[in-house]
Image: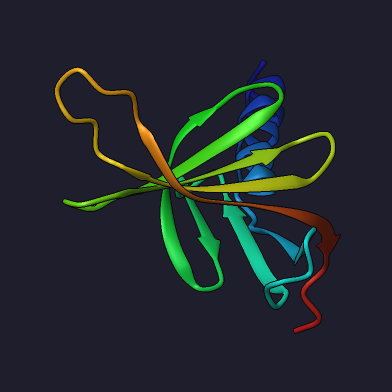
Length: 118
């Protein structure tokens, strides 16, 4: 019985550390208007880094991961599609009373998974 318990505990320990690693993607703007950059997703720490700018992960579901930065005059949102590896960036203005959210900027990126060499 002790051996079985030890196996279960070790299995859970290794399972959580396997999911804790960061994932890296090289993202290229679909329009070709911006330079490529590295996107880092760490589900354990609940952060995404887009071009070294840190976004807090606010939602993870079966198909998408959402990250955001809230500022007083705007909100930055990135949405990563887990199946197509497409990243959509939105910059929005805060809602004024009786208005819909105003989109200031939108960009779409195609990302490819990469491995860290070192």
